[in-house]
Image: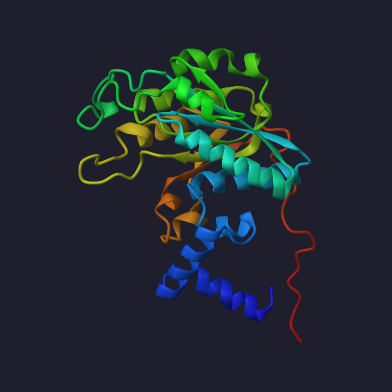
Length: 276
């Protein structure tokens, strides 16, 4: 990147008034490559795009041309529509095909199981999906309707998905998230060796008061306590950048026993010669 381009990009990324104006301009007109707009957070749901883009890049380095993404908790369906947008852009730029699967009860949130599901914040019936209306708007996503604890049992056999590279967890409850995370305990060859995960309900505010002993955070903690060869880890490089709230909602699932886990995917010929 030339010095002039580097300066321009730095201004685009900055929090200055000029940077904000330029990002708005780029967003409205759809200027620039998808990868650049994604880096500037001027795409819809950049957290979805980020997870999908990183998964597709890893797949390409491993010689794969197809991956899958899962959204747990479809609600109104806007997430699946957004995933289709990102998938089309990634296919055009990277040549990696993305299969999309959405899991939902079909009737909104079930009754909370106990205090761990935060019944002071969530209610049975929230986020009901209009299935017929949503299906009419989707072009490639597969909807899997029912209790996730049951529908996951036959998911691999029924759909034979491409290796799963990204998962969006938006089931709200501890109990539902824990059931969904059972997917991570199946044969690791059904995934990429490292999977980018987004957890929607881990921040919140003064009402939700999400913590380590309830909700999605508890489900993550318990999974790690019970799993030896698969761990859901914090990507600390994102945590150091507080410019985007969603950076605090990304985790990486490592499948240590995956046959490709140790495949080299970094930069070749790394050296640090002594300077004269």
